[in-house]
Every structure is written in structure tokens, then in C-alpha cells.
Length: 160
Image (cartoon, rainbow, N blue to C red; front, top):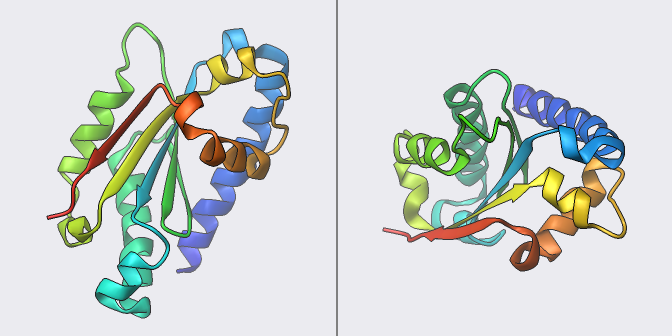
């Protein structure tokens, strides 16, 4: 659990820095932010009980971090997982990489709830934004509340 907090702290610190860079240089900085929402805040707790759901979510944070490249960072906010994904437009396909990791996940028992996945291309968002979020918390809040307009891809994985 402590290492879960450390991973999330590193994610937030890095995202704070990225927000500041994107305010000044959004054209030269390719990074995606992926949100994986595991149901609502109560669905996993109701299915497994709160302690087991928390253990599963914490374990999934580490599994996701280990499944991606070292340059990708994973953070968790409740039942939402956020993944920072630096990319090059020519060689990286964020969607394909994400699907490979999710389908190979050892946490198939978490598939009991529907997962909504959204991919945000941060440079595009910062280029078009009138007000540019200057911190990780304000960016995450902005993306969650405006997901339909800001996400480049949104898809759902049904529960089994």
C-alpha cells in the first residue's frame, strides 16, 4: 500500500511539471494521458467488500506500472487509473499498446465491472484551451468533467 502511494505521488509530481511545460511548449511535447475508470466508486466494494477491492486496486496499480515502459507512469485516484504515456506520433500507437496491456492483465477478476477508457492527447488539449490547467489536480478534474469533448478516444470494456 505504501508503494502504491509512492507511485501516485511520483505520478502527480511529474504531471504537475508536465502541466507547466505544456503551458509554454504544447507544440513540441507529445504525451498522452489515459484514464481507465473501473465502474463507479462503490461497484467494486459492493462486489468484493471494501478491503479486498482496495487490495485488488492497489495490486493493479503495480501491475499496470510494470506492464508499461519505464517512461510511462501510473497513478490511481479512487477507482480511476491514470497513465502518462510519452509518445512519438510516427512510431507509437497508444491505443494498441493500451489494449495489449489490458487484455494481458492478471486482474481478470476486476472485469466484473464495466471499464471506461479515455485517451487524451495533452498537447492538443493545451493548444486549444482558453484556460490551461496549471496543476495535476486541476488537469485531472478538468479532463474528468469534460471527457466527452476532450478525449481523442473513448471506449468501454464490458463486464463479464
